[in-house]
Image (cartoon, rainbow, N blue to C red; front, side, top):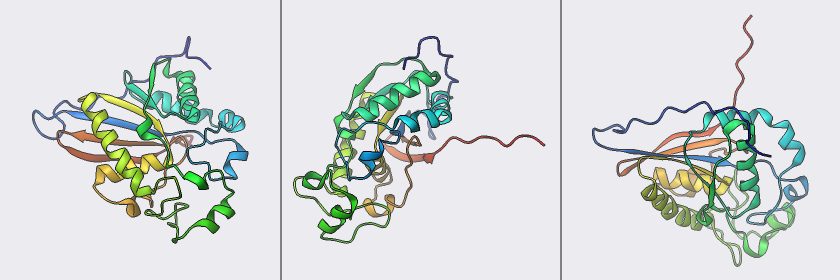
Amino acid sequence: MGGAGARPPRPVAAAPPSGYRSGVSTTRLFLIRHALVEPSARLTMYGTMDVGLCELALRQEALSYRWLAARLPAPARWLVTPLSRTRATAAAIFAAGYGEAPFEVEPGMIEQDLGEWQGLPHETFAERLRHRPHPFWSIGVDERPPGGESFSDVIGRVGPTLDRIVAENAGGDVVVVAHGGSIRAAVAHAMGVGGVPVLAFSIKNLSMTRIEKVGPDWRVAAVNEEPFTLPAEG
């Protein structure tokens, strides 16, 4: 996939330099969850395993890629995680009309590490749990698999990462192609809450979540934004 000859992206209006107070700048982070992974991987708890994307879904979700290409700001700094599914998702967005852009690897935004339980089938994974899982996550927020991370650990990792990204890009736009867990952790950091409330948020593949740092304060501008098609006029 390549962006050569692609149409220029529709620009997203920049946030006012003053934010909501005079003289305060706004830094915007656009968090994209990677595309759907291959069917065999979806049978397991793959966590930080480096699994590929689903080729069928890549073709079927063309509308989502075009929407993201038009919706995301340009120029922007692009970050991906060490896992290839985030790089492949970024490449697909570029090819859908955004155009080629450099990206950098940000390890701090990787998915929750499930340690020794990683790669287990869902049923076997559930048998290993020592605590009741969250209704919308496969593991409780404070359950730490052997050699892995709890979701609370992920929040503790993602929070300082976001603070550093903002410090490096004050007043600018940053696109981060990441994971369902790390995006929820980013929302938790922005809201100043623990893991239980944010796991109630749906973060679908190819959805966009936007958080902003306005001066010293975080705010959540959108969670799980998805493409939509206007109905035909009657």
